Length: 368
Image (cartoon, rainbow, N blue to C red; front, side, top):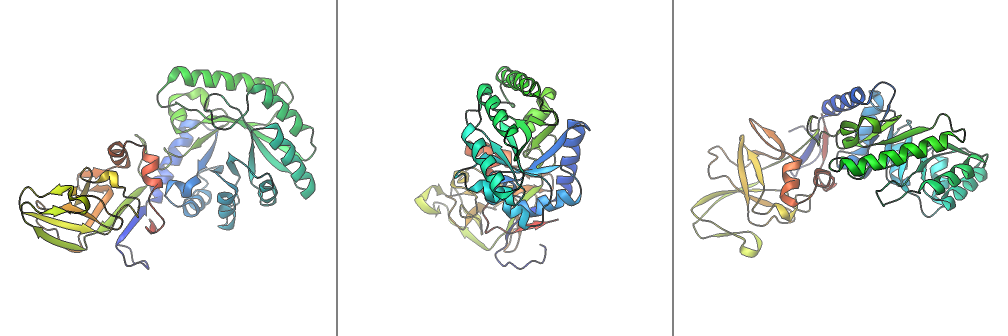
């Protein structure tokens, strides 16, 4: 384990070479004319926003970054990021426009009221506000339909203080509903043409997320916004994150003994059980109880009993060399075996995004 200043032997390793490989592959797929926005919201989906963004900027792997809030954008600026940063969320209260404009953050505009507020904030500061207008095409989250988008465009274009930097939408089902996605893209294309008819040359038009990038070439437009593929959380890309720990306690339990809270596991035979210092307080959620497997000495070892806040018990009966100090992989590979975020997501009835985003801040990130 790398020699860092932590004692509890549970950590996540982020392979920056995997990020490089994935982002270069994304650029190749998107084509030379499309910009790449690396989405680093929610602390880069658990991978560490500051470190991953600094790496991508230093290696010129992305045009800019996507965040969810003013706070996330400010944290990137404070970490030294100078590339474009787009706040993908809807800003409220409107006073937050002032801070965003002051620090050179691009803002999403989804309503006429927001357009008026950002223009006023821009005038009061004497600084240009760069705005991306969000078109609602079927996600049902934030965004304006075409008639409102046209009014927003006119308001911003006539303000003299705000700059319209882009027009975008969000694909809701790019990984599973071709008909719905095609309808979203049709509406976006028609709206982009209507906006262009008002003299909006130079706008960055963007619709593709990771699934859109791969499945719908027509969604790539002028920029793609990628998270899942960049972190290697979908097929065809290299996983960047591994989650590791070490055995801190070993015991032998008798046949008929119970393990953990609630007596959810009863030993069917004498068993060798390892305790590892990772639990739901670290993001290794209770849904993995009596269901997930970890890797030790290149072998899959089942989690037994309920996952607790700080510790989890594992059946290592068949691992001859298991001992206190043995390295255990929660996500990643050992030998010929691997446990991926998607496997854990399937066990929990969720998506890989959630699995890695839930890894809490008390798990140190090590960048390799």
